[in-house]
Image (cartoon, rainbow, N blue to C red; front, side, top):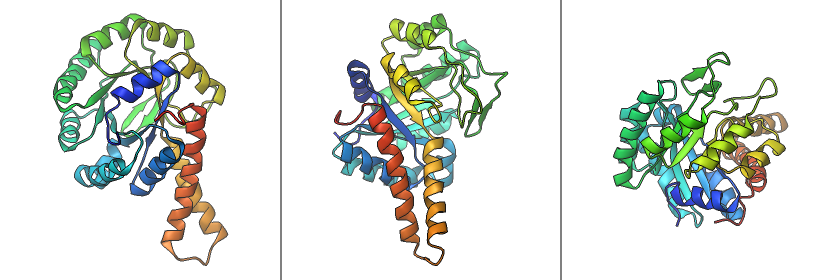
Length: 284
């Protein structure tokens, strides 16, 4: 059960009206905090890796310790490559053992987006690897992808149906007004568009830009069928605040393991809140 792709967990989430959180981990410490919290709550979880994290640690080294953490878990754990625009890197991660990848060609015209995404689906499925695709442009910055508010645009219902049908993706992220990073103002979210897309496609839907949304907004998206919700900035904030608070409270402590333990506890507390909010506890 432990090391799986996203297919089973997302369809179960959609069917049973909860969402699986996808946490953008940055190293072994953060991955361990996420998975240990999932185990304690008997929840499925997605360890999400950004392209910058993959390149910083190295693909082989990163998947090496993520596989070990996942295989030890009694709960379902998927390892997912997030927002990859590099076809060669996406294929390399599939070859190394990622169980899921997102190819992001959303800034291309829809015909090119479909072609690129379908090519990754065709490459990934023989390896039993799931693929996520995106339509529309989500504002904000995610790794090296920066989209201004002026350049952001929403996914159309008709285009979404066409995209899902012609690509064969296993998870679909339509742009409906969320943004990457921290929100500087109240986002204008198109719940009606999200609901219409959900009603017309069987593929589980994904919400990007989760950090900073209210509990009410999260619950609304889940009630409308969101099966995967990405949490990236919140984990980074928890990580850094955990380290910062330890240094401030313990200025004479020079044991790095104590510093790490406090950061891990802070990440775990944040994750617990998300699992509970998404109704993912006891779903493994």
